[in-house]
Amino acid sequence: MRRVLIAAALFALAAPAVASAETAADFNLFVLGDMKVRSSDTEGRVAVGGNANLDGYTIGLTTPSGTDLVVKGSLKATGGSTYGDVRAGSLVGATGTPADPSWSHGTITVGAPTVDFVAEGARLTALSSFLDTYANTGSAVVEGDNCGNGNNNCRVTFNATAAGLNVFDIDSSILSDTNTITINLAAGSTILVNVSGSSLQLDGGMSVNGGNSSQVLFNLSQASSFKNGNFGMMGSVLAPKATVIGGGGQLNGQLIVQSFTGDSWYQFAQGNTQINDVKFSGNLLTLIPPSVPEPATWALMIGGFGIAGAMLRRKRALAAL
Image 1 (spheres, rainbow, N blue to C red):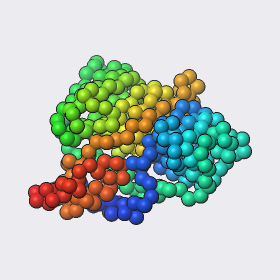
Image 2 (cartoon, rainbow, N blue to C red; image 1 turned 180 degrees about the horizontal axis):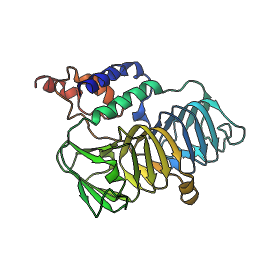
Image 3 (spheres, rainbow, N blue to C red; image 1 turned 90 degrees about the vertical axis):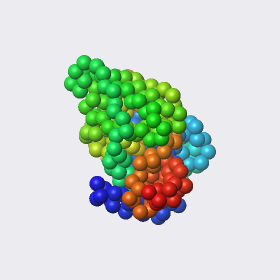
Image 4 (spheres, one colour; image 1 turned 90 degrees about the horizontal axis):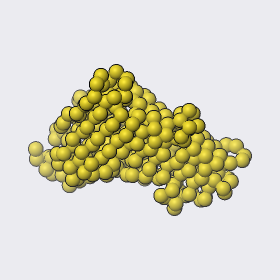
């Protein structure tokens, strides 16, 4: 535990160096590595730390002004469109590249990205590991016969009815076998679901009662694979080590992943996962250990995900504990 705290704090201390650059909090979809997709869209802004190959993909429906797409490496785009400006390391291909105004409605700039992807990758990985150490405040209610045996017959309910932060742990084998997820929220509460296991696949439906998806975060700190199999995800996903395979359905929140690709079968039948522009607005700082000597350091690390909340205002109160 102590090693996790120290490592995360060191990454947090690097945050001021990135402060002038954009962070994951500024984007609807944040990909640390490569992105290769066909069809569908991301309503908000997109950042790609590797190469991007976009076929019939649309970006920036809700953010038509400013830079909607940042690609550190090469960008190839065929069909689809972006409604704002584009910044890429290089352009690939002749027909259908951003030089074609039928794809881009904004200005194309070839040059350095506005994101330090290396620093962000380190910070987000440390943050995900740190959030995974939070103790449960409740237990998920799991119903259905033979849950976890691959029958997709489970029903999971998270009752996040306490004020402030509600934390739940669940194994990916249970969640992957679930066809219905229900989240019951109290007014102003936040739910953090720490999902253990190396892979997660979701098929079915999800509902949020008493609040909305901006208060929900699924943290996949261990996952190397996450597949959305035509699932309606309500909440943001932090999975900095995972390759995400979109396969129909939609995600209402921010998505932070290692790489993003589409499932060809689902794309052919239904299109890729649609990512809707919902920013995470919950507060994950209520469980910061009082033994940490400088709470502002944690605010720097977590604040880059847009969730610093009232940490700085609580600094004196925490120091007194």
